Length: 189
Image (cartoon, rainbow, N blue to C red; front, side, top):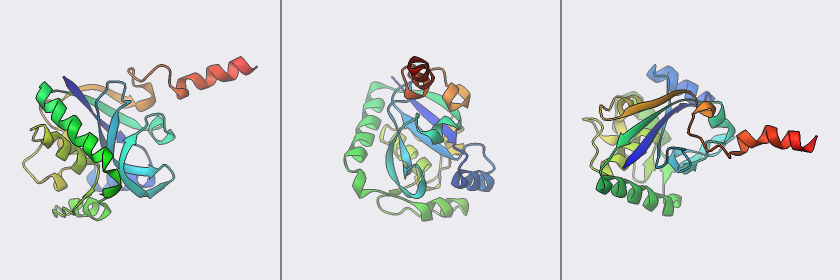
């Protein structure tokens, strides 16, 4: 079985700030259970236009922020047991999503290598690391609240499938609104 780890740079002010602090091209990481990224989860914006309204999210790659994003999509082969444990962990978080918040303070603490592990508060790489740990996948020899997207990307067991603009990722669902929009305009003419 396989899952997909998706690294993105959405080119927002917050992502530029994170990128400047880390010197790494990707400021966000998500976990997807499907190759077409239709089942993608992370901690991030709940409101496209306000970075401070954030928490656990099921992400939509058709959102305009992702449509302009640069990305790297990696595949991780797993045993059925690991896959099921990670899926169960993420589904439990989705059911209880209102009890979780985005760890803005922890996001800045990680820049200073300070482990600020607040209860029920995560940022993207912390969440992905914890999700993988639920399947007995250990990414790095450091606490999950100190793991950065770069650390996850460096994990030896991952296979890079694609790097480039997310809207050009070859496995996106061909029936997406983004792809159909020009055709719909032609039909109206």
